[in-house]
Amino acid sequence: MSSHELKTPLTSIRMFSELLADGRVADPDKQRSYLNIITAEAARLTRLINNVLDFSRMERGEKKYNFQPCDLAEVLRTTDQTFRPHLEAAGFKFECEPPDSPVPIHGDADALSQVLVNLLSNRGEIRREWGSQRDFLATCTETVAVAARGDLRP
Image (cartoon, rainbow, N blue to C red; front, side, top):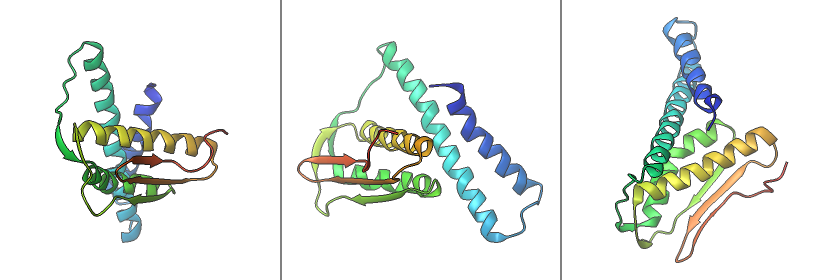
């Protein structure tokens, strides 16, 4: 991870919060949009920092996982609710199709959610940089599938 990856969300947070704090944005729709960007970028910065801390713990052999019965469909729904605003604010189409019935697994729900967020975030950065097809599909059944549609190559 480069310092640029940490500075980018911080720059957006600072810029939009200063615009709002200085009273330079009168339009309520723009204010709401700027607040949504600040929220999404703060969440992104939190994820990046948590990733750095997790990698550090893994390198020291201190990372602990909490394996227990969990519902993969619920992990997908929760991740969708958390990450959808970030993707849509960046102009991506995101489809989440978890089944209505549970998909029971034995795993760490938080770690699985982080894996999904990392996959989607990485895919979003690739698409933003290369600027081609920009859509995602996440689903799970008895067999798990998380897909980013479109070619990964520039």
